Length: 336
Image (spheres, rainbow, N blue to C red):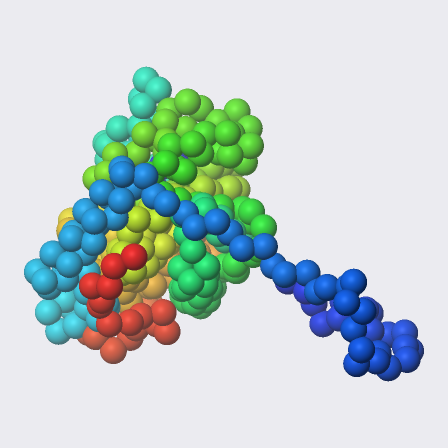
């Protein structure tokens, strides 16, 4: 679930104002010529054969992972303890390395050291759904992301909210055909977007479940200013929530995955579906004011160790089994 980092509501006031004038009571008789507008119903969406095949594939993947004891939602437990030393090492590997790099008009998997990156502005998450996502799923996704945004804000101390518009983190929930056609929308969001980044989205292989692309500017190359996420509409519920958790958290600056990180969602073994307590502590470190965007691992390591020891004093070993946020729920094999 990669993160690429290319460098370069009606308010109460409105309701009150609408009703501030004194008006006579409205009679019960309704003019038959006047009809209350009926909300337009969206035509039933019929997925393509490619999209239907992916939905079946991902439903089987989710079921298989759960049956193997993966996609855990318990946040860890006695089998996955960690202390400040483990927290420090995992943070260094996840926050100060990239998982992918752009090379010759392509995005390739190559772990490389990178300075610390994060947002200075508050992060505003805007969900954009394709026609393939029905109203029930939209409501479920919005509720999940709203709960996640609160959890991320509480963990990091950084403002994270959901918005009705594009926000500065735009997350597309689209099926296979809609994703292939996203090029113009991506270029509108980020003028001058390179072909390699557009192709990474429109040519995303089935083995990539979801992705997040974060952008900075030349004058502040280590400060994120915009991000674009893609979540496959074909995913069943738990894989879908897992994608929201990992990609949005990675979009905050935890850019890498590590096979050593446990308990953590930033590990491609899919053991954990949702953010763990260690992930929350890594977000707290990332947004600690003593760290600054652009710091290298060498510069940041003493501070990271000190912050980790404040969060988990020496000799403290955290059992994360009872530290879940409100967005957690038991696993399900329900399909889309």
